Image 1 (cartoon, rainbow, N blue to C red):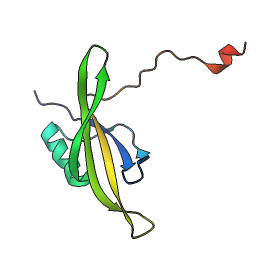
Image 2: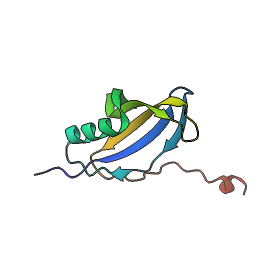
Image 3: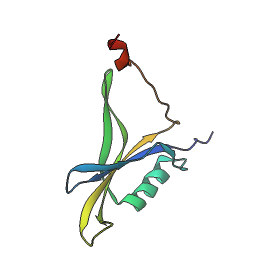
Image 4: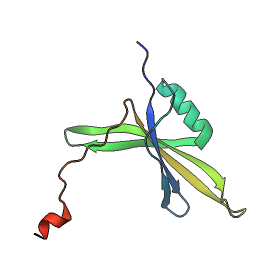
Length: 109
């Protein structure tokens, strides 16, 4: 059975200034294999410099994506910077999960 498409979320970082300047919403990549997704991202965002991981309470860290780097021009000048794009990957459509909310107006009562 063919795999459905992978979902991605991109975070944009100016590596020269060590600051994040953008983050997208989860979106359907249209890719049905990790290999084709990786090649597509590498073509758009530059060379892969590493993997993205998250820690788990019940085991070792798990890979959730890749980090890509490319020299880019600023939109408003001829100067350049190193742009990193951190791409998280999900095999299913991500769903918002909210737990342990404390509403601030409940404390005022």
